Length: 136
Image 1 (cartoon, rainbow, N blue to C red):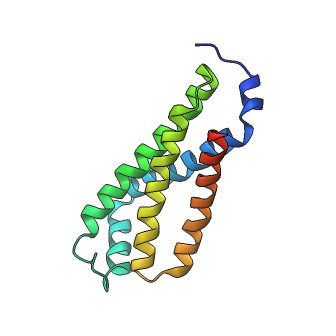
Image 2: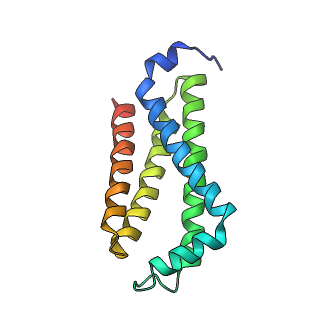
């Protein structure tokens, strides 16, 4: 274990992307835990005319799990870059985050919330840029 401040300068974009994704998912997961009933009510209404209408509580729990795991893994990805100069864990964290964004995108598209889907596409692009950058 050998922390070096120069690693921040070696991976500035990658670390910022990982921080962005971690803040996004950890805040979203925290919000779902803090206001489970409010989120469940809004999503039940949002998906009331879709094939997901009877599965909202289970899907919300699965999404919460993926968001928390994605957030924690991106933090660990930053840690392994800074402490060990290893990007392997960061890449895997962004792969999981990408899958999580795809789950969100599928939900928005099925609900015909195209503006919401477009917003998720922006997050997904940032995520993909992180993967590309870490693999170069």
